[in-house]
Image (cartoon, rainbow, N blue to C red; front, side, top):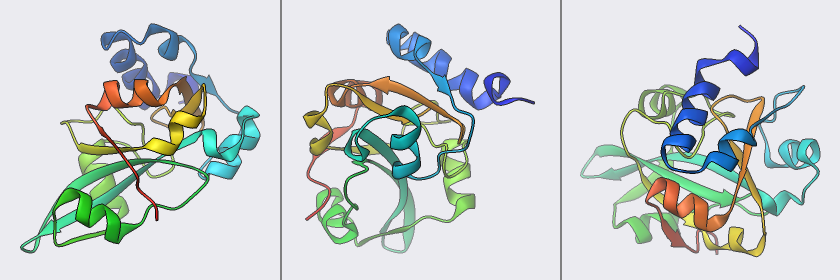
Length: 166
Protein backbone atom coordinates (compact mmCIF):
# COMPACT_ATOMS: atom_id res chain seq x y z
CA UNK A 1 0.00 0.00 0.00
CA UNK A 2 1.41 3.40 -0.90
CA UNK A 3 1.85 6.06 1.74
CA UNK A 4 -1.08 8.32 0.62
CA UNK A 5 -3.41 5.34 0.98
CA UNK A 6 -1.91 4.28 4.30
CA UNK A 7 -4.52 3.74 7.03
CA UNK A 8 -2.45 5.73 9.53
CA UNK A 9 -2.55 8.83 7.32
CA UNK A 10 -6.27 8.41 6.67
CA UNK A 11 -6.90 8.05 10.41
CA UNK A 12 -4.97 11.23 11.22
CA UNK A 13 -6.71 13.15 8.41
CA UNK A 14 -10.09 12.03 9.75
CA UNK A 15 -9.14 12.96 13.34
CA UNK A 16 -8.00 16.41 12.19
CA UNK A 17 -11.25 16.96 10.28
CA UNK A 18 -13.38 15.71 13.17
CA UNK A 19 -11.58 18.19 15.44
CA UNK A 20 -12.42 21.02 13.03
CA UNK A 21 -8.84 21.36 11.77
CA UNK A 22 -9.80 20.98 8.10
CA UNK A 23 -6.88 23.07 6.80
CA UNK A 24 -4.42 20.80 8.61
CA UNK A 25 -6.12 17.71 7.21
CA UNK A 26 -6.04 19.14 3.70
CA UNK A 27 -2.44 20.26 4.22
CA UNK A 28 -1.05 16.77 4.89
CA UNK A 29 2.06 16.31 2.80
CA UNK A 30 3.26 12.88 1.76
CA UNK A 31 6.99 13.14 1.23
CA UNK A 32 9.18 11.14 -1.14
CA UNK A 33 11.36 9.84 1.68
CA UNK A 34 10.73 8.89 5.28
CA UNK A 35 11.46 11.69 7.74
CA UNK A 36 12.31 9.97 11.00
CA UNK A 37 14.24 12.91 12.47
CA UNK A 38 13.44 16.59 12.94
CA UNK A 39 16.37 17.54 10.69
CA UNK A 40 15.08 15.29 7.88
CA UNK A 41 11.54 16.66 8.24
CA UNK A 42 12.76 20.27 8.30
CA UNK A 43 14.82 19.74 5.15
CA UNK A 44 11.92 18.04 3.36
CA UNK A 45 9.39 20.74 4.23
CA UNK A 46 11.79 23.67 3.96
CA UNK A 47 11.46 25.07 7.49
CA UNK A 48 13.80 25.61 10.45
CA UNK A 49 14.34 22.46 12.53
CA UNK A 50 12.66 24.19 15.50
CA UNK A 51 9.37 24.32 13.56
CA UNK A 52 9.16 20.53 13.59
CA UNK A 53 7.00 19.13 16.41
CA UNK A 54 8.59 15.83 17.37
CA UNK A 55 6.06 13.38 18.82
CA UNK A 56 7.98 11.57 21.53
CA UNK A 57 6.27 8.81 23.49
CA UNK A 58 7.75 8.01 26.88
CA UNK A 59 6.88 5.54 29.62
CA UNK A 60 5.90 7.56 32.70
CA UNK A 61 6.54 5.22 35.62
CA UNK A 62 4.91 5.40 39.04
CA UNK A 63 5.22 2.54 41.48
CA UNK A 64 6.57 0.29 38.75
CA UNK A 65 3.57 0.88 36.48
CA UNK A 66 4.18 2.58 33.13
CA UNK A 67 1.69 4.85 31.39
CA UNK A 68 2.25 6.60 28.06
CA UNK A 69 3.32 10.24 28.05
CA UNK A 70 3.38 12.11 24.75
CA UNK A 71 5.73 15.08 24.49
CA UNK A 72 5.49 17.34 21.45
CA UNK A 73 8.87 18.99 21.43
CA UNK A 74 10.54 21.44 19.10
CA UNK A 75 13.05 19.74 16.87
CA UNK A 76 15.58 22.34 18.00
CA UNK A 77 16.25 20.62 21.33
CA UNK A 78 15.90 17.43 23.35
CA UNK A 79 13.26 16.77 25.97
CA UNK A 80 14.66 16.42 29.50
CA UNK A 81 13.28 13.25 31.11
CA UNK A 82 14.04 14.45 34.65
CA UNK A 83 12.11 17.65 34.04
CA UNK A 84 9.29 15.69 32.43
CA UNK A 85 9.06 13.41 35.48
CA UNK A 86 8.76 16.50 37.70
CA UNK A 87 6.10 18.02 35.45
CA UNK A 88 4.13 14.77 35.30
CA UNK A 89 4.51 14.01 39.00
CA UNK A 90 5.85 10.50 38.36
CA UNK A 91 8.82 8.50 39.65
CA UNK A 92 10.58 8.51 36.28
CA UNK A 93 10.13 9.11 32.58
CA UNK A 94 11.86 6.52 30.43
CA UNK A 95 12.37 5.86 26.75
CA UNK A 96 9.49 3.76 25.42
CA UNK A 97 10.05 0.60 23.42
CA UNK A 98 8.74 0.45 19.85
CA UNK A 99 6.12 -2.07 21.03
CA UNK A 100 4.96 0.29 23.82
CA UNK A 101 4.70 3.17 21.34
CA UNK A 102 2.71 1.05 18.88
CA UNK A 103 0.42 -0.30 21.62
CA UNK A 104 -0.53 3.17 22.86
CA UNK A 105 -0.57 5.14 19.60
CA UNK A 106 -1.33 2.56 16.92
CA UNK A 107 1.57 4.15 15.01
CA UNK A 108 5.26 3.42 14.44
CA UNK A 109 8.17 5.47 15.74
CA UNK A 110 9.05 8.06 13.12
CA UNK A 111 5.44 8.56 12.13
CA UNK A 112 3.70 9.08 15.49
CA UNK A 113 1.12 11.80 15.13
CA UNK A 114 -0.06 13.99 18.00
CA UNK A 115 -3.56 12.56 17.51
CA UNK A 116 -5.44 9.56 16.15
CA UNK A 117 -4.49 7.22 18.98
CA UNK A 118 -6.71 4.43 20.35
CA UNK A 119 -7.20 6.40 23.60
CA UNK A 120 -6.21 9.87 24.83
CA UNK A 121 -2.60 10.17 26.01
CA UNK A 122 -1.42 12.69 28.58
CA UNK A 123 0.50 15.27 26.54
CA UNK A 124 2.93 18.12 27.09
CA UNK A 125 3.42 20.63 24.26
CA UNK A 126 6.76 22.43 24.10
CA UNK A 127 6.22 26.16 24.55
CA UNK A 128 9.14 26.81 22.17
CA UNK A 129 6.89 25.74 19.28
CA UNK A 130 4.96 29.01 19.77
CA UNK A 131 7.94 30.84 18.22
CA UNK A 132 6.84 29.59 14.79
CA UNK A 133 3.79 30.71 12.84
CA UNK A 134 3.45 27.20 11.42
CA UNK A 135 4.77 23.97 12.89
CA UNK A 136 4.83 20.57 11.22
CA UNK A 137 3.89 17.31 12.94
CA UNK A 138 3.89 13.68 11.83
CA UNK A 139 0.70 12.46 10.21
CA UNK A 140 0.65 8.78 11.19
CA UNK A 141 3.35 7.56 8.80
CA UNK A 142 7.11 8.25 8.45
CA UNK A 143 6.47 9.86 5.03
CA UNK A 144 3.67 12.21 6.12
CA UNK A 145 3.44 15.53 7.97
CA UNK A 146 0.77 18.16 8.54
CA UNK A 147 0.86 21.90 9.27
CA UNK A 148 -0.58 23.39 12.43
CA UNK A 149 0.33 25.81 15.22
CA UNK A 150 1.47 25.41 18.80
CA UNK A 151 -2.02 26.45 19.94
CA UNK A 152 -3.48 23.95 17.48
CA UNK A 153 -1.40 21.16 19.00
CA UNK A 154 -2.60 22.09 22.49
CA UNK A 155 -6.21 22.08 21.29
CA UNK A 156 -5.91 18.84 19.29
CA UNK A 157 -4.27 16.90 22.11
CA UNK A 158 -5.77 18.49 25.20
CA UNK A 159 -2.10 18.95 26.07
CA UNK A 160 -0.42 21.17 28.59
CA UNK A 161 2.01 23.82 27.33
CA UNK A 162 5.30 23.37 29.16
CA UNK A 163 9.03 23.92 29.12
CA UNK A 164 10.25 20.42 28.26
CA UNK A 165 13.98 21.06 28.04
CA UNK A 166 16.42 22.70 30.46
